[in-house]
Length: 285
Image 1 (cartoon, rainbow, N blue to C red):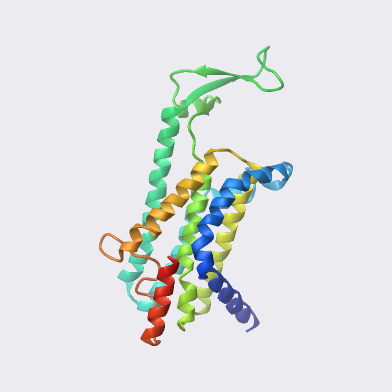
Image 2 (tube, rainbow, N blue to C red):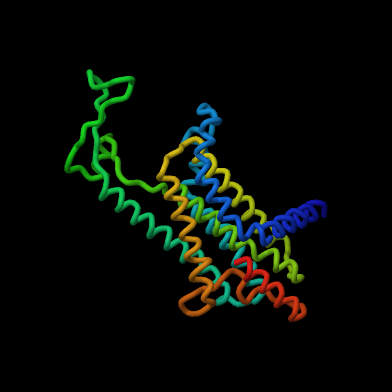
């Protein structure tokens, strides 16, 4: 009983915060500021910290499978919420298709970014000994005719026009989580039934959102790479704006899954309350 009360209080507070108009309208600006000024944290953090190692378990377990973790928790939450309200498998699949669209967009951009780096890059062989080594920094000798895969397999360095895929993914996942979970607040305000499984999934989504923000700060502070990280963040924000602030506003149809909460934010309440909550949610979007 005590644990259930704690769960209800925490999820109610989180739902109210994520569904707040100020948060909804300014979260992307906050994320942009983090990406722009986050590298300045490298002046204060210690390079001997455990987070300064790429082998840290948070990077290995979560960052390398960031999209998978996001799909598992957000997909479960979206499906359970939509299916518990409407009992319609087709409607639940339509809402889940937003994750499929975002995943396809992410994979497509990753392929394009790899192609860009391969096209604009060159292979360099470091000279680790001899008079060319100064101040412990080896001289790099250009090796022509090498592909990226061949270059890296030979233990050499590949330098090309790069956009940070990690920052791109984290920014996209943060914005997607904020959009998909924001519907829970208006749903609760309409008196929607929410059992422990739904609240637990929502809480996991909230924790995942803060984890992605924390990992984003770690990458910017311990592994600053300007301007590749800035370009990755910009690409993530543009992807979110194109989907959630652009295409999904067209409304549900055969070519558009619609915004989060579409055909869900109406329970057994008065029509005026339903209309007010829907208008409030639309305004936030």
